[in-house]
Length: 311
Image (cartoon, rainbow, N blue to C red; front, side):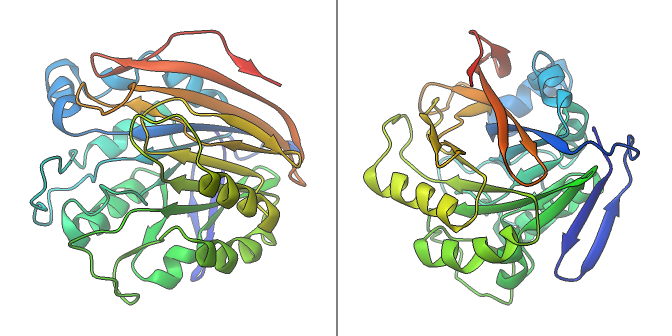
């Protein structure tokens, strides 16, 4: 963990006490990765080789900057009833501490596996993340709270996060007064982004979308990502396809259409590859520089496999 994080929500301010609270830099370095799946084969490897095994080679990258963000692709719970699907995923609640040691500060829980153990499993996942000092985003106890997003103070810079999922859920009847995930559509973007953009210096928008194994960006995906920027997003990151996607600069902002995988098992549908994306921003949201390091998952462990690209 890298800085003093103050999480600002609708119901006041919760302070996560971390080291380095004296930092007053006027820039912030954000590290973003794709899917982190801690169930199934990864869980077996962790039982055999220790819980830090999947992150051992990339943790230094994740801990370098001020804030690290990823998409948690498996609930961390012993609660709830397993949804009867072929690939329902679940990790152990104790793995939240592993994520914290690896360097994660904020994680999206808005994805197609978030409710594999129902609303109780999703609520438990958010609970164990918070207990480990990681801020969950994209789901909350009500729709209104989920759509509010979060703002995290990293020194002198306030960084906002919003997360959305493009997948319907067969066992998840929409109820705005109960545990809810933010759905991805144009109306939701227009309803949520402008207000949060006005409360922070840098706004990160996370989109769980696309087709597994497909690199190409559809016209609709490009339209929505650019709309998010037009509405106030400074960085747009996507995930779900499990492959490294296109990275585009648009109006001085960055769009990474798919960050792929950081940690997964061999049953990943796609390339089982990803980007570790690092962006440096000034307080007002100007992108100073960015770089993306390619990684692949081999034997349930993330490894750097090529030179960094960027601008």
